[in-house]
Length: 327
Image 1: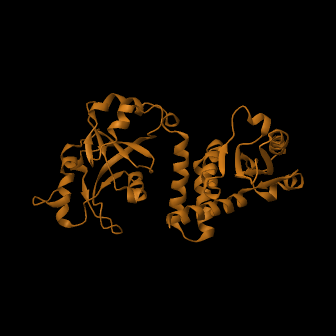
Image 2: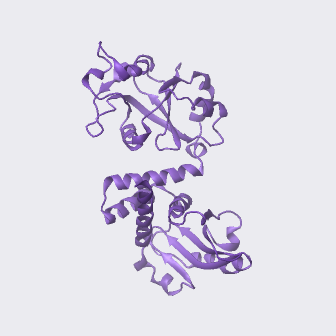
Image 3: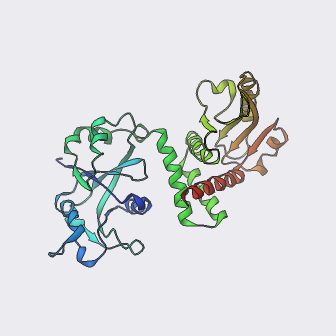
């Protein structure tokens, strides 16, 4: 199939609006506020005329790369499911009073620009400041991206973006604290695996422990020796720092004492580091409940255990930190 490739920009001030519409199968564009700005208007004038190349050139099967979708640090790869001019509708959004132009698409993939599978040629082409531009010179590289598995397209940075997206969406749904916490917990629980929970929590904990504190992922072969998935390092007043060791599990129901035994390795490991003082050990069990695991509370060995309800409370604190930075 012969098709063309395009770059397509959105209004990055309202990413969530464009993301929601994309999920409904429509890609929107701005300069669409007033009836006279409809692209079928023979007397079209003003800024809306800048959308005419899109109206005339995008055909069914064409591929569009859309920076800032589905979130700020990613680029969506979408396919036009009809010619723009045939599938075109004009209906300004009643809230934003804009973005009236739209046409049908389906999202194929999304990628982070820093992903090693993304060629420098594509990254350079995405640097264009135009609202709509040709990417035919990158056709081969774009088709190669489309064939890749989703995980190959996305770096750890994208997990952080997805967590930030969940926070923003939860705030948009409710300003009630309990509803917000429940909504955010549900979105993260449904959208992240165990390993991804670690990335999400790292991003959130960075908001609670900003620089000069350091939140780091400690997975890998060394985890066998220290039992630490995430560490929080807090600078001390002398020549050593304070460290919080965290183990994350996504277990459901009754949990064995194995995670406690794993995390207890942190004592011997970190006490051998003269630059560190271990001050707390925390086991986060994201999906289990305290009433099913009284045996863990009775055998903590200096470990604080956080279950599902505790995780909701933690996510609420993180969400408030996000909100305070936005205000």
